[in-house]
Image 1: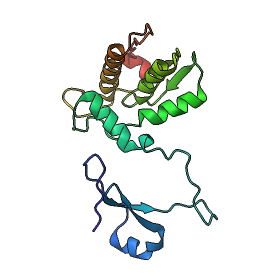
Image 2: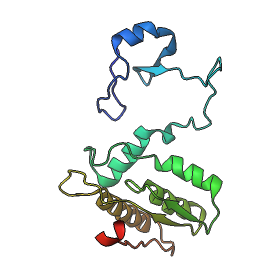
Image 3: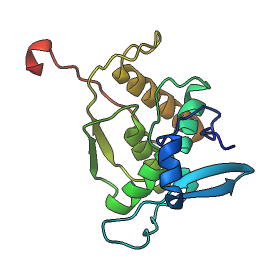
Amino acid sequence: EVFPCWSDGFAGCWTWDKNRVRQNLDWLVARLVRGRWKIYRKSYANGAERMLKTVLIDPSFYTERGQSAFNALFDTKTKIFQSPKSPYLLMQLLQTATEGDDWVIDFFAGSGTTAQAVLELNQQDGGNRRFILVQLPEATGHPEYPTIAEITKERLRRVIKRLNTDNSSQQDRGFRVFKLDRGEMT
């Protein structure tokens, strides 16, 4: 038996029921990953006979790594924010697509992974990239962080504190928060 467990210990769920699995068994592949069996579904483009490999195969790009990085930053095993992107993936993309003084804009900021990637990449290469994040104050149900925007701000505070502790660089790592008035959101 193989169960849909994430590498961070949290239980997942199957997307196919037993009947669909039986009917499409050729589409599934089982692989032993770090001592655990995992099931993968083959995915082909229309008319293709085989799937192209992604260039983003580094395990540090996976969502599980994003969750681990987030949880380490917040020093928790509780999922305060569900499935944050990997900051390592975004750092790689930013390194490829930006130069030292570029602006990076994320209109769906979520937990603030993009800003973390910008700050950490700046520390790595001495760049001065800046970011603009937009995040609506969506409710989370978490008492300490009642909205996603609160999680975003706290993540940035923690990243900046860590970077300032780890590095004596004089880089500007501050950020400002602007809030729209209710009348402006129509």
